[in-house]
Image 1 (tube, rainbow, N blue to C red):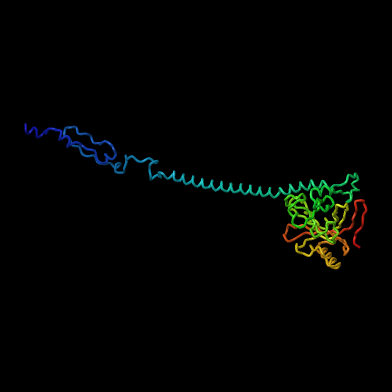
Image 2 (image 1 turned 120 degrees about the horizontal axis):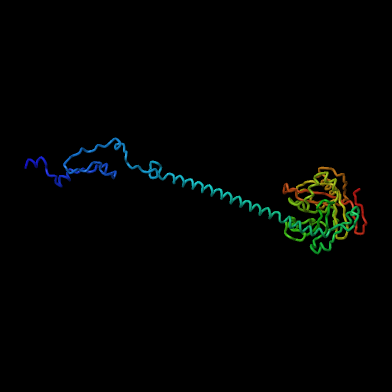
Length: 350
């Protein structure tokens, strides 16, 4: 019996536990069950399973998906996308800023343009109303509408502005046809219209040193040369061309006493604003004749009109809009004076 037990030991619980095959560390990491068969309980001992080449090379391992693999660029795509968004946002910000600046410049420029043009429109409209007080008489024969037929309502003009001393007119289609005013200085009407409104058009005004009846040897009259509209004395600069002079050789002065004075242009040109051409007093006949020669010298063409010590002239002055210290002058000599009754006197220099 003893010998029989030695050959066939009792398969006790302790023996089963000792002989039980446990999973390898590799299998524990992989969470897989042991490939080794459980003991049959009969005491057989099996050889441990050797790892295959696939196991050595990592076959059978659970690989991270591409979405979770750092090696495959996990997290990089969102970073690149964020950078692109920031760059696009910055670009849009710059574009919007440029657009805002462009709109602001446009609005400011438009405002400045409107502010510059408004005085021309308002001033022009005002003078259009004033011009209705000086019109041609209702003579059906246009050929008879000479300078003397041009009638000025000085009573109405003086009601509007007591400084009114005359009316100046050039032959049509010239637009120079305005009232002439005079006050105690040469500054007031630089920026005030005939109706005393503040406006860059100003008014046509006589030098404060002159006699308002044009009895002086030289009467100086000023007016602006406007960059827009061609009003006031803007057309005087056209007398720099001889052809324009030949088509428009005269201008006319109307006074409150009913007289019409005809002036023939004898010189026109540019001078400095400090030149002796602005002199209004003369010490002698010789001094005055010297002045007349100075006046003729500024012209680029010879009109052939004679002047002497007995001549009475009117000097029209405006700016050139080229240099601030330059003026364009047009000289006219009195050639005829006609009264309201139609009587006339030839004052042409001999």
